[in-house]
Amino acid sequence: MNHRMTLVACLLLGGCTGAQRYGVPRTLAPGDLAHHVSVDVGEFTPGKSCDDGRGCTRDEGTLAPVPSWTLRAGIDEGVEMGVGVGADLSVGLDVKVELLRSRSFDLALDPGLTFWGNGGSDFADSPGPAAAVMLPLLAGVNLGPVTLVPGGGVGLVAAGRETGRFTWAGSLATFFRLGTGMALAPAATVFRAPHDEDGVRLVGGLGLVLGDLPAYGVTTPVPP
Image (cartoon, rainbow, N blue to C red; front, side, top):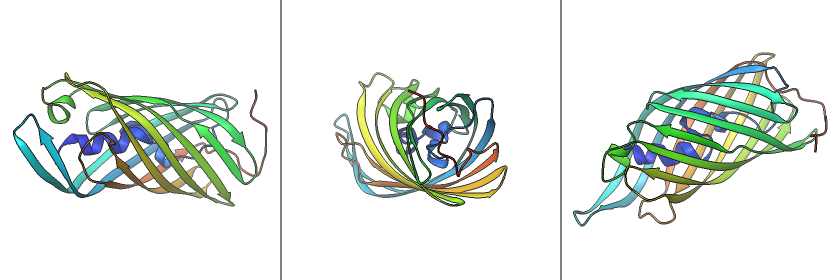
């Protein structure tokens, strides 16, 4: 199993280092900080991978656990930034912008960039770095101490000498607040590259959030 499965799954809804899939649309207050620690594990349905006339093979199997850590900070009202690293030698940056905040429903865009120093050797036909730009849209349904977070997004992936490739994904996470400074967030993502011959992929994982959490029970409007 190659890094491409991990790459596409992680980039679209947070990146392996972005941890957006384990957060919520509501942003941190300015000056607040939170640590996101997560582990992703993938299970893959059969699909075809073809290369340069050397034939096609069936891809299926399980992705070894990939841990990551991200530091998230409230930058301004309705704006949050995340910077992180992953065990797959990835570095990620994202900026979450709140579009809607209400007592029961939130909405945010979370564009980001992820870079892999060694991704091209497995993702492309030639060795080299890999990079991904993603644009996920996150929704939040607030149910007291629990928030359901459906999401979806599109992205562009490039590696080695390959041209950029568009992909898409959808996810669902459940954000459980365990106290004033701790939360757990199991999540699952289904994804497919539209112009690829791979089958549908499923990546699941668990995120642990430590530090400041977004305030709930308030409806402070997002500034224009």
